Amino acid sequence: MAGGGFADGGTLKRAHLYEYKITGYFIFACIVAALGGSLFGYDLGVSGGVTSMDDFLKDFFPKVYRRKQEHLHETDYCKYDSQILTLFTSSLYFAALVSTFGASHVTRNKGRRASILVGSISFFLGAVLNAAAVNISMLIIGRILLGVGIGFGNQAVPLYLSEMAPAKVRGAVNQLFQLTTCLGILIANLINYGTEKIHPWGWRLSLGLATVPATLMFVGGVFLPETPNSLVEQGRLEEGRKVLEKIRGTAKVDAEFADLIDASNAARAIEHPFKNLLKRKNRPQLIIGALGIPAFQQLTGMNSILFYAPVIFQSLGFGSGASLYSSVITSGALVVGALISMALVDKFGRRAFFLEAGTEMFCFMVAVAITLALKFGQGVTLPKGIGIFLVIIICLFVLAYGRSWGPLGWLVPSEIFPLETRSAGQSMVVCVNMLFTALIAQCFLVSLCHLRYGIFLLFAGLILIMSSFIFFLLPETKQVPIEEVYLLWQNHWFWKRIVGDGDQVEPDGKLGSQV
Image (cartoon, helix red, strand yellow):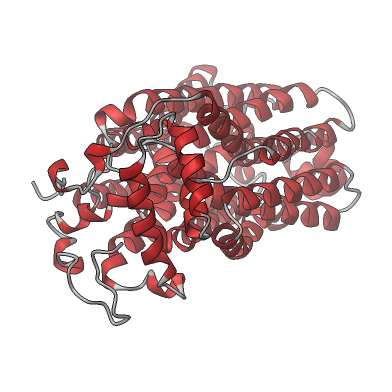
């Protein structure tokens, strides 16, 4: 079938010789690194809740607060249409977008661990500034510092987890990042639910508690080992082998270490990794990993729901407390989805989750659009039954996203780049992801105001497009060693026409097969 593109495991070079055990040292390293996801998740969850709190709106956005109190026909979809309010949310993602290029340099030259530490420090400072804010300028500057932290963390953590994990469990290990992101969202919503009742400074507590995951990540990061891939890339071969033996729980790592050295030799020959991304042999990784998947992950509409779940539910007629409670339910569904994906993604594969969940998400978005078209926008509160139906549909949508585009949007890009372009590629992933996150954050509320229920039909159409993209262009990567994923492109029905058989000589004189 056209969408297949599977590679025969027999074509892989040394994968059958890899040996490993799951060690306590490996588990500790992965759990600490995965805390980087909690920074991203906590902010995703907390920002939407805070922007729906009356005390916060009165202090910084009084016009929005006054509009929120009205129940006029024309403001049902438009209560929160304020570009300054959305800038409070999206400024973080624009900052993350810019900072990821600095993170790429640090990650490649100083190691993945260094970027994790820098990210935790910046996030901590941003949280302190936000909690102490007395004007919009302090809020925005704090958000920018948070964004730098997320830019560094999101650049380094998925790489760290993919490089530390044995091939057969890489999917589950990498999804620790998504799991901690989801737990961060859930905890943030629970905290918002409590602090919303603390007047008038509850919102400060919500924003200030972001220092907790940042502190945990920094303290744990001090004790993290660097990945063997990064140590070999830096020329620290003996140290790299020792770490590899320690995390694999065996001294029989010759085959895997040889693959790391081959990949590192190819990487050292590359002076400009961003430029190298544009070569024909890296075209699949560029189109799928660096551009397609991170952009589509945001265009599912999921982050719009996460950012503004409390705002959406209030606009739908729920009270402030009830809307935060509904957000807790939806973020709980996200955690369940992540756990399902962790348990089954290495058994059923990436493509199966993308395609099955994509079908569900399309149906749910259409259902939300039809319901709102028929029952909402008349200047009256939604009937309780309709409101409960919408919460259930949104929860099912979140559950589908939580086991597919959420975790796999980070997993697949982190496992398909060769070492020579891995840091640059991950920077592109974070950059594109944050660009679309920021644009969605900045545009969603004004789009909801003008497109009304049509915004959900737009997302449904985009989900159909992205599912087709996966079906035709993404080969299955489950249980393929990270340094041998490049062989999949040479056996794919479409990409083999572009990358060739890997034996052609590139302009820099290097064999294409030495990826």
